[in-house]
Image (cartoon, rainbow, N blue to C red; front, side, top):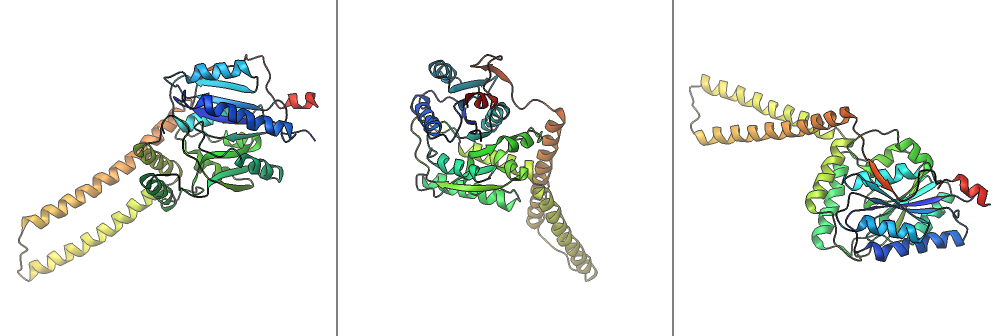
Length: 330
């Protein structure tokens, strides 16, 4: 039986400080798997440069020239982390049997790949890397991250708790993922939709080795909103339910006002009226904003614009880095 071809997909954005540290570690892990005959000789480490403004792409080119196991692709411009991961996976899916996506910052435990490959060998097509705890996080990041996952669950998004984008996915899964054409990407919610046999591997996350995190609170909030509006209509349902409740109160209030009028009683006070009108106006504007978010996403989806554009790659188009090579190496 032929050994599986593994491609490790690593999205990068302004990672010139950390790549010289983590790239040798990725190569060491890949070499370890090859020596133990768990993967084929022509397995690769694929860096995806997401339009970095520093020397990230130059470093990737240097790595690929120094060792054939390193490959790199560069996006035409910065498209965001999710698009970078997808670009790498879609590039890899026709050249390998299985992929593992992982961030370049060195925080994710590489030893978790051992258990991921074991689960793949046991028949799992998707293996999620899940953090066992958040002791390495600051109090603010820990609270905000936990709120992030709870909010997604509350809004009906099927996600694996404490899982980001550290996962193993077989080429079979990626072939079906390619059929999901949405522009608004939220990969950690899309993989559960694809299905297939899956499991989780738990690990402890380390502190970032160098550089600084690119995920601020604002980006986390934007990611949560994108995930909810891309994978759930629960906010729309919530607005409808809220509208029904408010309408019920309004109907009761109308009956009460009519009864008071028949009894000759008048309700004094402009303050209460202004408060009610302001509250209702806020509810309406918020509802319009949520509906507008869905309309805007529908507009973007209807344009069918490409989700990524590869401007450069470190190998020539006629070169073959395919799983067929593993058959010849046997």
